Length: 328
Ligand code: COA
Image (cartoon, rainbow, N blue to C red; front, side, top):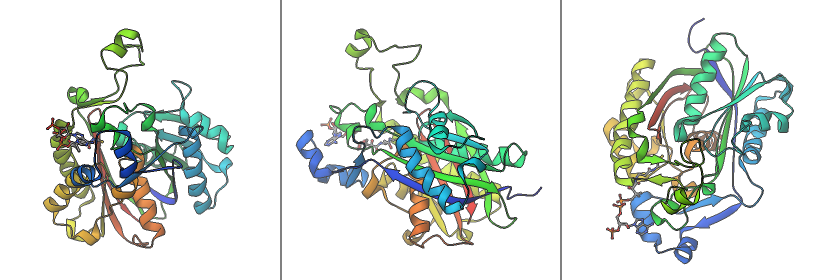
């Protein structure tokens, strides 16, 4: 069997119902629309309402993907969810999604790679398809980051949105599909962006609360520096593995974390602005959902068309990074 082994046959996305423009954050904390737009490119984000937990948004995105692919839930062989804000510690959010969909024949599990989770999941699903472990695998990225954000920390509270993105991966027709995938990580940088409490190391105790370790914690400047490098290196790896030059790529779909990080990646590879998919202004940083949302929107808008080659690149807490080239 030759690459491409697996192709995307359907996609979908969903976001929390509460629209939160920067102006609303000006009321809630000591910040300004001008600061947020200049430093991040974000103008608004969507937050979950009560009852919109991870498997709820995951189901909305997944149903769109399944519908587009024209398959029934019973035909799905596996469900992988990249998330660090699942419904609960266990069972996995993928198990809850399996039940919600009625995907009774699917195995299901979550993976933890923060913002890189969906691209990690895609890479894993491709390998499972290539080795015959399944013919149809649903890959979802969902994050309800407001559930772990410290709303009194303006440097993180303005960044994130709650959302899900999904793709159904099936055996390739020999033309379309994943031309390359790449994953990397560096656990030595874990403390730059983490949510240390609630596990077996730091339970949520009064001491942990007093030490300010209850929420997502980020050293923004350091994350920024590593992110620029990781996004560019991962892009290069994806291109090399696919044997392609930047000019042979129709669109760059970067992780939507910060417009300045995106611009640094764009400049390094010389992609013209009109070949870069950007939606950070409307969604904020939706973590693992960011790339599938950008891909799904661009496809539905007719920007990404059948035959187009797209390179995606992402970094996230952990530290993790991942990339890949998809031919649609
Ligand atoms: N509104 C207004 N001022 C803010 C603010 C906000 N929302 N957040 C921070 N500030 C202030 C700081 O308090 C600081 O003030 P001081 O100089 O008086 O101490 C000043 O702005 C500069 O803070 P700093 O953290 O150095 O800003 P920055 O230029 O590094 O921008 C980030 C902050 C978070 C936008 C930037 O570091 C970043 O994008 N990092 C990467 C984060 C990321 O992508 N994370 C997700 C990974 S998937």
